[in-house]
Amino acid sequence: MSLFRRSGPPAGAITITVDGRAVPACAGDTVATAMLAAGYDAIGAHVKSGRPSAPWCLIGVCFGCQCSIDGAPDAQACLVPARDGMVVETPQPLTDKEGKA
Amino acid sequence: MSKVIDLCVIGAGPAGLAAAARAAQGGLNVLLLDEQPAAGGQVWRNAGAALAGGSMPAAQAEKAYHGAAAALRRLAASGVDHRAGATLIDIAAPETAPGPGPEAVVEITWRAPSRAEAPRIRQTAAGAVICATGAQERPLIFPGAELPGVMGVGAIQSAYKQSGLVPGGEGVVLAGHGPLLLLTLAQIRAAGGRVAAVLDLGAPGAMAAVARTLPRALIGDPALMARGAGLMLRRALSGVPVYRRVTGLRAHGADSIEAVSFSSAGRATRLPARLLGVHDGVIPNAQVSRLLNLRHVWDAGQGAFLPVRDTDGAVAPGIWLVGDGAGIGGAEIAAMEGEQAARAALARAGRGPDVQGPAARHLTRRRAARRLVEALYPPVPMGAYATDDALICRCETVRVADVRAVLGTGIDGPNRVKAMTRCGMGPCQGRLCANPLTRLISAETGRSPDAVGALRIRPPLKPVLLMDYLAPETMPEVSA
Image 1 (tube, rainbow over the protein chains, first blue to last red):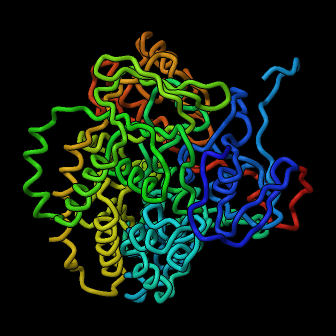
Image 2 (image 1 turned 90 degrees about the vertical axis):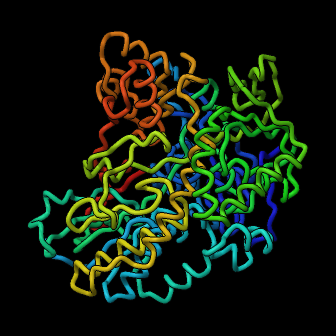
Image 3 (image 1 turned 120 degrees about the vertical axis):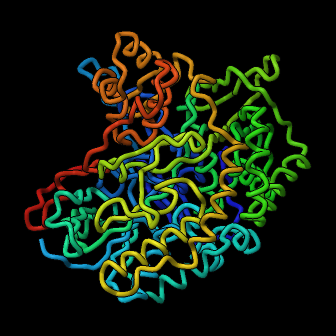
């Protein structure tokens, strides 16, 4: 179950793609709020620790929501307005030669 | 580089909006750069769309965006060139700009929002710059704080304003203290959400400071005082259990938070939790004032370093710092400071007499009200919850123990701790750890925050790709 629910009037429905999966969103969302509303508690994995990473501030400060958006690998999801058809890829942990995070 | 615009304003919250509109009305040609998707800053996040009937119920929007509609109308009518989604990368310090007089040019490097606008990195030469970069929440350092589901109450506010999101279901716990926590509690409940418990992390017993600041606060800003008292009353009437004298705060969970444990008045307690909103007040976003290498002085009331400014907010020839980014005062003080700096910028450009606006008297009164807020909600002492295993730097996964170990070798400055531990070297560039690191070192070594100092901040202010400097014709094919 999602951490959040929408309380406002229904806004225009759009769809973004997160790691290949279609995710419903609303016009006016940022990529980060769209993912929170769709039940993503975490936005990929922390590249160093390999632990799930999540937004802490939602104002562009903490980089907990950093991911790749439409090919820009360094986007902050909380600063990018969600648009229909947007392609999001969440970060995966850096691994060494043995495949360990 | 020759001047291309009269004034660049950085940040489109209450301070930046007031500054930009006033300067443009006075005849300056103004570029307003803002990182957020729409004007309004954090307090008026998404105000334009929300007031037009999106994201949240109309009655809620009217309450949440007091003052925003007028500020946005004024911006629209002003002729200001507002760029949303633009990221500040660098400001050339005034001493490197040619000449100290009114002809001096400040060089601003910024990143356009879209890769379609290559090269995304732009340089703008401005006759003057007003920086209004706003506040951020002070991170609360405790074990488990990095788990998904733990976020600042400011983030909960942000999700509400942006998309009308309200915490849903069971296991919503708020921990901390301050007006924003009370407001968030009231908003969640007004929207039909449930809060299982509030952990009051405030230190009791600052009554002398409260009594000293209360009279002037009541005179200075009675409306704010009434709003604050209303929020306290609503918490009292809400029936939400409040735990006080909290020690040993810890978030537990595997891939996200599942429970929060603590002791309250000596009794060990464990509550199931799916969302833990934490709050220990707000602090200036210090990246710009640190980038400019300004002198800062520790403000014990705000628990933060503040840049030293002139009365109109000037910090160097042609550069002003205004609003919460220069010292926490809230939206109304920020807007007044923005107006004042714009008047000074107009005078400097020869577009008007250098007079202090009617704002000066109101500013003094409103700031008196702020002193009461500081007396009521002093920052949570650094040692209260910062156990050895708590993370102080999320980006580089540096624990409090790592910093303590380095301090044990006799190293005692934040920049040397940074070199030894990588604390502050990750993508957020110290935004989350700089304030806690100064306070941790101060607490551990017994030296004052002024003696300890802070992390140095260098450009670029946000991580940038080399690709962003390239024009389309030189852009290589890149696979993501």
